Image (tube, rainbow, N blue to C red; front, side):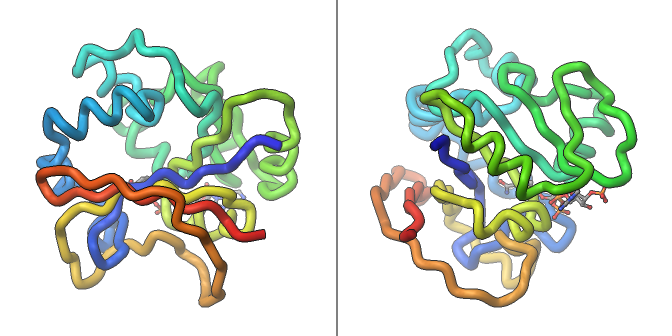
Length: 194
Ligand SMILES: NC(=O)c1ccc[n+]([C@@H]2O[C@H](COP(=O)([O-])OP(=O)(O)OC[C@H]3O[C@@H](n4cnc5c(N)ncnc54)[C@H](OP(=O)(O)O)[C@@H]3O)[C@@H](O)[C@H]2O)c1
């Protein structure tokens, strides 16, 4: 069974961006130490353009071969004219309004989102599925998530876009590892208790 991993950047108080989802205030913490970690452990979680700009476009995928995004997150790339933001992965975009995939590497999931995710998880293979976000999609898929990798930036937002755009429900997770960085960034990995 392949894992669905929600790999996400958030503030200390659990927001993935400002009320509109903008997370650019976190970017200044992406320093040499964090970049080395990203390149060594999660190179495929950086978008293709970013990988190119930072000179690690040629690094092989380490953990994931598939990415799932909501239309809201995907649209950020589309607005920049980028139709395949994770060209090094198989890309799935959940949307009931995008009638046609804007890129041959992108497949639209228009209905039965959970069924499609279960189908992907049931595939053979050593690589997992990267749940990129955003908030609404993660809320819809909360029960399907097997692993959380939470990058916590040393910032308090007070309010903003929550990690899960869904209602109240308690899910149990086990802390697997914590990695701390000199600039105050923290990466915690949790596995779901089933
Ligand atoms: N901090 C981080 O690491 C991080 C990572 C990713 C994203 N973000 C932020 O998250 C924000 C976007 O989040 P968001 O919550 O607004 O949007 P989102 O979750 O990316 O996308 C929501 C859209 O996904 C589609 N969708 C969701 N559930 C579906 C289902 N069951 N079936 C079919 N389609 C479904 C719908 O599209 P339709 O309306 O087309 O039906 C829905 O409007 C962005 O601003 C981005 O910056 C932050």
